[in-house]
Amino acid sequence: MISPAEIERRKHVEAAIADSRIEGFPPPSRIELEIYDAYIRGEIEAQDLVEVYKRSRNNMAHLRMD
Image 1: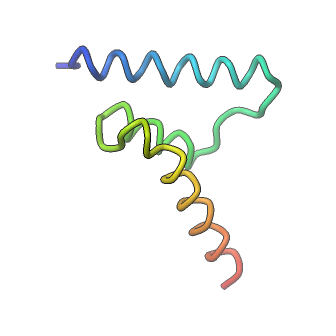
Image 2 (image 1 turned 30 degrees about the horizontal axis):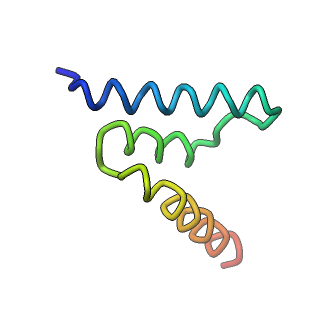
Image 3 (image 1 turned 120 degrees about the vertical axis):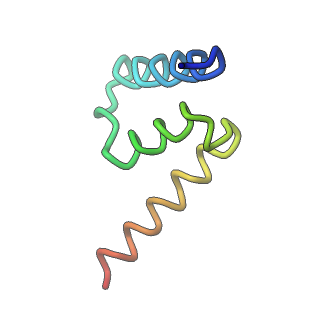
């Protein structure tokens, strides 16, 4: 069963994606979607989203350089 908190987090993500589209940004990448899904499930706190995204970008950059 989906908790009320999960429903609320899903609404936050949907609003953020919609706002990005309005601003002309491309759709979320696979990595961004995985981060959003983890946030929706409650595995990542809202205040940690930017840091998690930055770390995932850095990890991907290192993989491309190797």
